[in-house]
Image: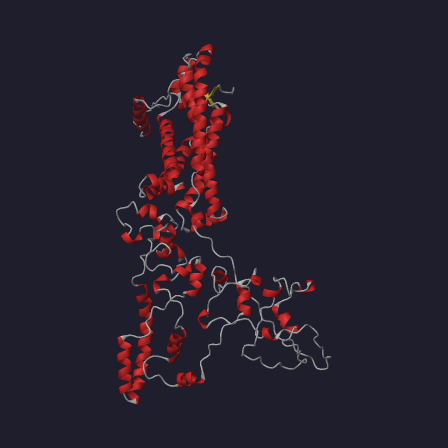
Length: 582
């Protein structure tokens, strides 16, 4: 059988453009749909396989840029064909397309045996083309709004950002399903077309798919091409205009992709300072008959009593600094060789317990109300008094805690005796001693401030409670170190007071029953206190607000829920700190 005659369908430039659109569309669908259905197991697995959400977003953005460049090229090439070559608008919809669609339905239902004849583009191909044009406009507009949400909210209502997200995801799902169900079936399954590979169609394919165009070509009624001088005259004004327009579109695409930084860069950075963990090694045992080894290492000064973190200071400070051959040694090695006061114990003996009494000349101890505060430098580097000495430059918080121990706040003998007695007033002595030890301590945070780490941003801007004048220059770490979170349960209440009076007046057997009832009620009140602690707390964010960091831009413009009057001047970081996601 002789080879069939072939007709040119697509040029090389058109095929390259089609492949660029196809690849970018496939990448956009593969990276966009998992983001739309984030939270589903399959979507999370796909995102993890592709390297995480940031990698997926970067690939999605890069594919969007490729598709945008291809669309700009298509618009310029189409303008050249229409304005310079003056070709027919074969892709523009006509009334004949509606009649062809009805004839196609009649043919598919078996009502007629004659297949309708199509021109260069059938009604189905026109529908796909204009659906792509519509989708490109919608996806471009909504993609810009999600790519630049902060600047979008400056000019448009904040409601449009979640609306753009819904439209972007819905249009993407529709486009993917249309390509898979409609385009793949008609082009690659029903009849496998090679037009996008070699650019040609056989005569049999032309009869079946574009019979009207085949008749026109065989009759010699092809598209006439203007004379070369006419084309040159038209190109004299088209090429400069198209060049300026192309540069303007490419510059606009650049600002489209770099107009705004991602919102995550506006959040404060977390502290990277971590307390070093120093494991305790067991004391080596002495075997029977082994020779006694005397330790000749330099003894520790008497002021170093109770210090166990040696490398924290001596590995970093100028002097005395660890010798070169001590690199890699642990704190347990230091205390094994360098004994206190120069009195090395004989092997197999236990050294005498060190005295808890401060040694004259030793570093100043921390006040009793500094218990639990691990951030020393955050306060004392910024405060005028007590300020760090000049020779303490470069030291870390672990160094401070190692040298400056906490003042001994052990209760006295009388207090211990009182604590050993059975409580008769309904409150324990430990609670009383805790309240006594906290006298004069910094004010505790309210119970509903749990998990808030942005103190200065709020209290510097709020009129009440405002930061004291001597707190200027302090950081969030300073606030959290000094002001611990308060307990939601009150130390005493009218009910407990009445219970204490009833307990004092009751007999010994009644007090025993009351103590059991008190134990049961304390368990229930503990559960109730957790509920009460959340009463009056800031309203949590809805579940669909996860990952949104632009609070003020939306709620200042929305009629409901609107920002309260006393929230004027607050920033997004304050909103996220107070209103947590569930």
